[in-house]
Length: 140
Image (spheres, rainbow, N blue to C red):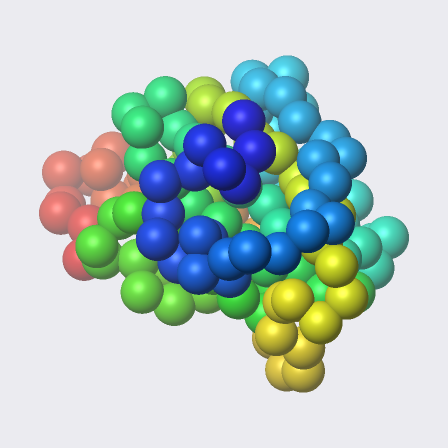
């Protein structure tokens, strides 16, 4: 899976006509959990485009610049910002991912969300959702 086989229009707009997009890591989420992958990106201050396709055919993408998530897109209509896309990713346990090295200047730089904080927030929300489901209360 690479950016050409991804269906999200936002990804195609980001990479439109560009060259130098190189897949550097890919695999199955069941073999390398997203939490581990985000941790590597954050601690290594990596830059790239992370594409994830869930088993349910949902697609999510994160743009990471020096360990900061500065851009996000999702096929899920309720995931409109970086935190929501991050939470959607944390909930996935099965699917495929590809990390693509991007040419300099393609991804927006500046203030973003720390990949580590995004991961921790997503895990906290997942835990809260699981607890609510266990007590019979609907998740909000």
